[in-house]
Amino acid sequence: MRRWQKWTLGGAVVVLLLIVCAAVYLQRLADGGELKQIAQDKVRQSWSRELLIGDLSVSLLPYPHLKASDVSLSNPDWTQDKHLFKADAISARFALLPLARGKFVLESLRFDGLKAN
Image 1 (spheres, rainbow, N blue to C red):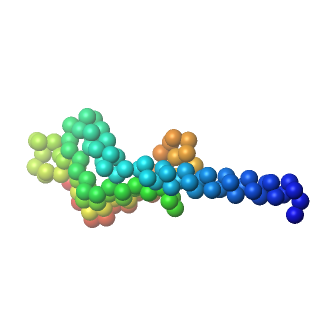
Image 2: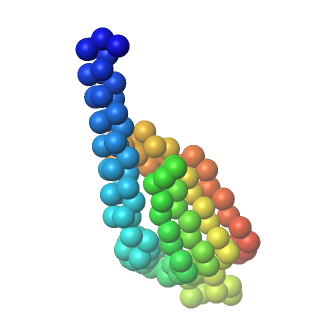
């Protein structure tokens, strides 16, 4: 193997290791409790409604995704039904490359046990 090939291969390995380390570090930064609080505050400010979320988990590996359980959004007081919707679980998957540029592109959204009013 030529010298430049060794350097290229070594550089590629270093870059790959840095990407893996960054992904593991970002995985630890993704705090479900903090994201849950941000979502609840935004819904309260924007719509004057309550968003209830049981467990919320975020994962970046093998692809960026979010999973929430026992999710419900309240209706206004003047309606008969207490909740606009309730779901046993919600899963969302995001595109990786736009996320690296700071844009959220939703690839899939799945509701389990959805009841909408």
